[in-house]
Length: 211
Image (cartoon, rainbow, N blue to C red):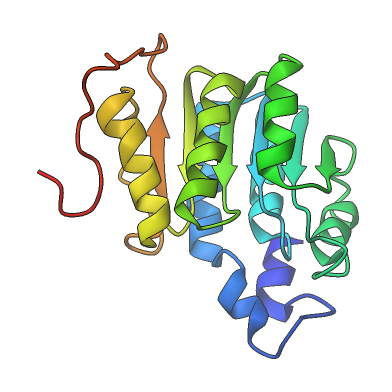
């Protein structure tokens, strides 16, 4: 199903070039799948569904290693994508392990954290605005188990890279890789084995151009 989607595209698109612009390329889907298979996760949380390419790759990895939970967050699946991504999941018969939360990640993640959700890895491809990515990562550090992985798409955008850099420089998240795929696009971070509590009197510079 993933190969078919990459070759033929979805049955409906928002604009003529939207699928090629928005979806995760097949080589990067392969990279995400391979990384997750190596991690052998039981549960993964994903932010952003769109046309479903990355979700199919995550589902493929989970099925390959006996995983059983794929939580997807996307508030625009029905309003902007006419459920194209979710239909791809259903067509691949992955809806038995996947659940779609149709709300903003900045609203859903605090609730899931409060409920005690724990996953082994996360894939982040939602808002690329710095403050939204920062909030997503803030709650993911509670939801993703210690030592787990957070994989970011579109790390080449400044809002994504800058938010991630804070967690690398101040909270002990470590780059994991390199990843195969489009150079500069995917960025994987491994959480520390124990949460890091920084000194509030200090802040390691993390913004672009900081030294």
